Length: 152
Image (cartoon, rainbow, N blue to C red; front, side, top):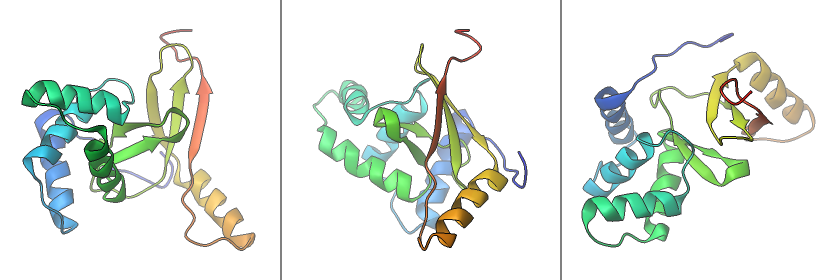
């Protein structure tokens, strides 16, 4: 996409990249964090903390509280391992965790699938407009809803 390039990770490479990014941020890669990330990365669509708590509970054979998952997801968002899809109150694994930029989500109203595109010119323009209006520490949240090609 314009003004931005990065390497997309998947599978074991994604888990390794996420672990490295978290450790580089000064955080620990615990078993629980690994389980939550694995559950998130295995989801084809954005997942809620409740969905992930259920998956991790099944993997661990004991109940995992959604509040614990929320705390981990907040950490993942802060350290760029995951993105929050605001309109769905759900999360998606970041396929390039070592890369900082603002995503633009395209969300299908029919199947719920979410994909992201990167366009630093567009998000840069939004940040510039916000700064011109006197805002600081701006974080664009851009989500477009419609029908994906598979459902169309």
